Length: 349
Image 1 (cartoon, rainbow, N blue to C red):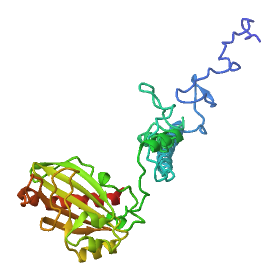
Image 2: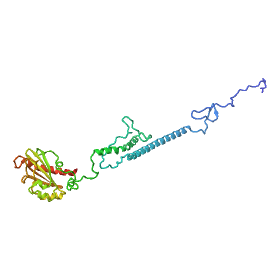
Image 3: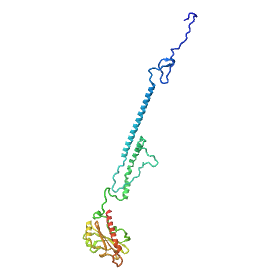
Image 4: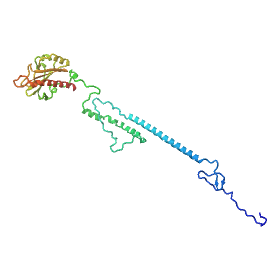
């Protein structure tokens, strides 16, 4: 359209192009704004969330998760320690070695060699029965417990070891029983069954008594018993059933002591012979040697133990002498004590 004067069309100054989209202004703290463009930046919409509050809530949730996670870890650790402790107690009870079957009275305990699978020195020890065991101190204690049951086989000796040991060792008395009283054993011929003769009863060839050395000169077993007695002793022991009279003579220089033991069937017979005692045993010497104390009057002793009576007579073997001998007289009671000990020893065989 012309302005009517110049006939030219008036020039129009172009304004801002409203059809082009306004440049988007993004705030630094959130997503793009949806408001109306004003002077080149966008006004945040009134309905946009509060990002600071959301960040606070997110931090609180993360904090709660950490607290729950930490609490769960503590509870799990407590449960694990309890489980390990219970397992250790159960394994400890199971590891107690059970007593092996009672061995026969004559079988001694034998240590068997260690099992073949025992780790040699330098071989790492196994960490435990379960690969998932915790490395805590409690787990270490529980994993060491199973080592005890593996030693069970060593508690029971092998048949071969037992047989060898039994053959080498003397029989042992049954467990829980007391050995019989020696005096009771030698009080009856039914229980006193060990071999009996003068040499086994007096086996020592020399004895030290009274500061002197005494040498066994001779031994003998006399039956009937009265043939080795004098002064009426035979009339006392024969009616009680004397079975034999065992004698042994020991000398030191010219001093001589003869020990005599009269054997009866039971203790009552020996006690009766002792109660009625008279006379003495005769001194014993080898054939052709100078006799001594073949008649009453020499120093003598007498006593009884079990089914035996025992005697001593002291004198001298000096040629042509019949006088008392002080050394033999002093040694008589000690020889009597030696005879008693030898008789009681029969009750322990």
